[in-house]
Image 1 (cartoon, rainbow over the protein chains, first blue to last red):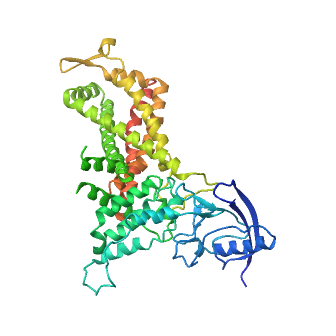
Image 2 (image 1 turned 90 degrees about the vertical axis):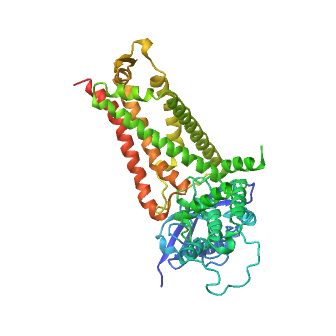
Image 3 (image 1 turned 90 degrees about the horizontal axis):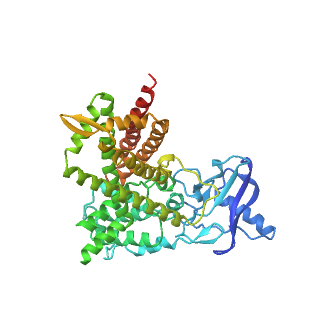
Length: 250
Length: 234
């Protein structure tokens, strides 16, 4: 039987986009180390419903760390204190009995708040719509070695392809920049033969859309890499800049 | 304006273009501060060494003016883009976190990186005062005359000695230079990353190199005013 924990939460509550928001204190008794952080919120919500109060709204879907739906600031860190872990995979064993944890939504003007901890991340969809795709039909998986891709390029492209678009990079960046997300998509496609044909057009269009969405500039703090649940390296931001300069000058 | 030229200027104003320009101008300014620091250190050689250095610089004539105009343009561009990045960042966040902290390594978010705008603005104000006091300060008409290689030139060694005997200059100057050290600590590596001249492996060398550069340049600048100030009591 896992040891019982009592956790004190301070959660951002806001009824709607234009309603005033505030931090509200809750205590959840009966938590245990095997629970994920979102399960802790589920338990809290059950208690709130039981008391006739409005449950805390938060996003989640797969709860396996691969869909990118969840994402909140836990104790001041996007997705919480455990590295390379989405908040749905953050377990209460990362905390101690009696801990006080502040829970806030991802804050960025380009991610307008919907309710409580839920933000609208469709700005990311618009960045992808601007060029994060391949226009031609690439067919099914090609035969091995039909399209030569070096091991290094394949590995690097795969690293960038693991981006789940959760928005933690924006939330943690002191500038609210979306450079890591945009660069991961650009670099993933630019490294592969199928994506290289439209690389120039893509990088210019996606960077323009990122700017128009109102995200801040990158100041190379590298905070995005530290909170990314997939550990995507800022090397992709350097690659995005190279691709951009190449697109403009060549 | 042709559409190609228009696209080029739009690219310069884009988030990537701004960072590339900041990086390029930043590296140019790094080169300048290193040369400036080495020039200042000639003071410690004593005698006419410092005035000789100043005289050699002045002998470049038109080339020196071109370099100075280029340098002023680099400063202006670097400062303007830096301020625009800061203003854009304030708009982009939209609200404050009640609790925010860095996740730690591999984050390179430090006091230096968070305060680039503060150190930058202090350096900008300092630069204006510095130019007023030294570059456009008292000259030969006010009696600051030295003779180098049989030629009468402005006695910059005397001006520097007099200025740094005042505690305000002797300690105010190092205080600003410490901020320059912090600016270089993040700025050097950041410029290389902005120009895509880094890789994860290279960064492990280049990032500490920025700290070393900040310390070496800072120490090089600070030693002269402190030397002048404390020498007057010996």
